[in-house]
Image (tube, rainbow, N blue to C red; front, side, top):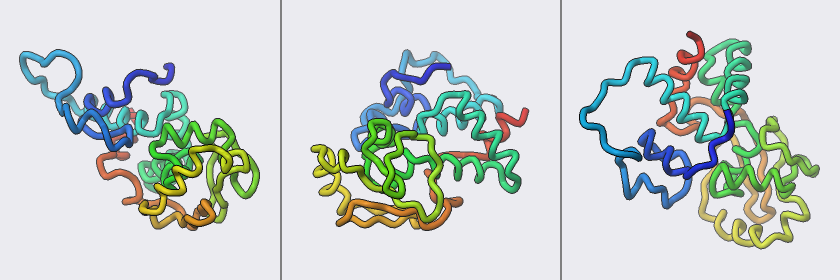
Length: 202
């Protein structure tokens, strides 16, 4: 399945939660799903609800189905609570860490920063958005990234942003560090990872 390239907020309206991460999400203005209104409301089955929960997480992190399935397989093999493992793997992606640090306004923007070679990990450029960040590693802008016009904008915007407890950020040096592993409560509350696990477990 190819990556979805249509209007981001269409998925937000479809699933009733903001998945794009933008402050001007269309869901704020139009809360009804896209398309014509149904003549009667159909009851969603348990399987259908599990599919919805899976799609919400997948679209929020910008993954294709094959990628997402591989994360599930890793989470299942790891042992423990598979749902928490799945979300932890997703949160530890480099593009998501860049987003959580405030270097990118959305996950899509953070992924673009990484792909364009503007982000470094432990002083070395890393342009793979799916790369896993480990505790103790430092994330910063590359020399090329510091010369971009976007760098000055982020340095001003980041002053008022908070970061999760498993990350720490140096707003003067424009760098961040992963000080722990994300756990329950560190991802969006509207995600239901247990339903995702149930969807794939059938």
